[in-house]
Image (cartoon, rainbow, N blue to C red):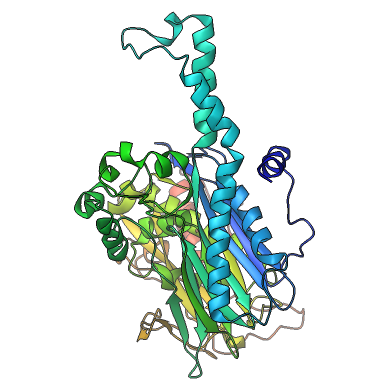
Length: 505
């Protein structure tokens, strides 16, 4: 069996090619990026995220987002193996909640053990070659070694890379119209539900297994680990997660890691924390599964306080305007990517937190939530939800934040848990009203072109009634550019007549 798994990994075959994809979800992705001084971004490594979205038998659906690191081997393996362990007849509608929890836990355990079996040969070769390595001498460089020793060193480096790496995972299972969330690590699951009174309730399901999670710190302390040192270090072997799949060096050599050396047994585990079951009967809304890179990018740009509400507002806005879930998910990811980049380019206080971002993945699963056939305007029942976008004017040292008004199909406010927190600003148009402006500046110190003339009469106010066409079929213009033409003429005439230049002749 181990040999079969190794062969499958090496041939890049999938165990789940025959399973149908779920058509009620969409996935958006973006690769990692490091910004240079000129604001241009470059990708520092191949995309290491993974995901799954399958429809099984007996009304069973499985979704997952995997955040890989030090390569995509573990994320790729886990997405295939976990699907095979859950959707090839293991689950059916007769299973109780306890049965489902047990099957999910066992599936993660099998994934972990199966992955380590695939690197058995590499570990054996690594141990064998280590016997031929000369004792470390700082005075001897690599090029001073004999050709044979150089080859051994190069091969050992390849093997070290092959057995390293890991992944965190957040998995959603829907069975008997009940939702189960299994989480290992620092990805995130959000459930947005429209309540009976017309509100959208945002629920974060579970907490990330990170070095600032009190329950995880207590678990590590019970194993003999100094939790205070873990909190201060903020990372364990380069990662903030305290639970992960794979990562052989950390799992089997933890006693060589300073902050974990006092542990009585393996402190970094792959056991999932399972939340459920939550009935989806009568629920209208959507489920979001997000990689750590996506949420970190948004929180770096705008802070963590309203990150959940903000990502839900973006998704709902795109659902109101897009007819494809793939387009919705990708648009939201691109929007987060742009927000992150614009904060870096702005040079403001949070710019130092936005010099880079990791791979980003967003999976959206709708729950009786309608997709738009076309863009929904406020007069058609939509609602304006502002999303603040940092903006920097290269011609000025002043900075401003521009609010882009996004249309949402709901007439409700967003709540986090049971606490209502409206995302609407004062003066936001309500359904049935037309917005007075869809682009507003929140920095009153930054001058706009409309006020630079002094009297603010660059634009005429449009009447409440739409202008009627004349006998030629044309409608009178409602934007007056005559003052612009006069200003342009005075600045560019160079003493010559402006006749024949800009403006109506």
